[in-house]
Image 1 (cartoon, rainbow, N blue to C red):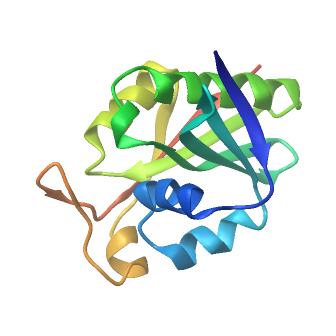
Image 2: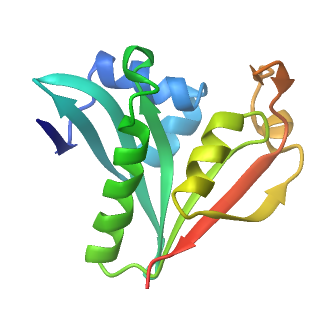
Image 3: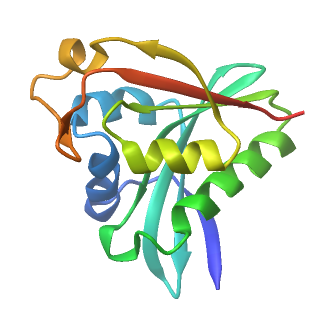
Length: 152
């Protein structure tokens, strides 16, 4: 049985997952203080993690979402997004935002299949804000792609 649990104390296991989605520990530390952190678990095993941060009274953002590589491709990312959507609706938010890199091809596909639309691109965001180059799918991650979904 899958369940979602809010966590308050971050363990090394949680950090491994958080850093899968965002390789900058400094960046992660800057937003986890303000966010709510949830895990997706099955049979007492942590399968993934998600961080939701309020941007305004009307908007909440998925700042980090990661599924353990052993469990990727099994629908847990989609379940996490569905949880974030329903939880955000229940809390009265009008809009849910998620950002990713231009090289995150699988994530971009998943987010759009779950109802998110691309609304903005911040060119060279990752080049300007991360010390080390990020490569994914043979593509350098340079640009931040912002997607959003209206929840009404």
